[in-house]
Image (cartoon, rainbow, N blue to C red; front, side, top):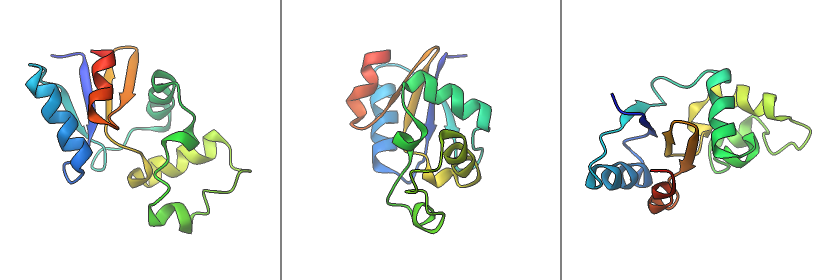
Length: 116
């Protein structure tokens, strides 16, 4: 089993490009379709630590749920935002590649090469 995982949305072009890039490098990552099996709050906190990002940085601000849940409210803390992302996984920016204690957002796809 590989240590490399990708939080993947097959409908997202950046996610598909990142997966293809990994495969071109001979890497067969564990593919996690996070819309089907979203991370738990604890798992998302671990991922954020590996990314060295805040929850707000990982939010997809163009999603309808971002607007309807009023997630732009700066009074919301990371725990509030993490709960929203777990309930509405579309809010999680993608793709995320995880290699043991490191993670990288695949925007652009080539950025994940830093952690391989």
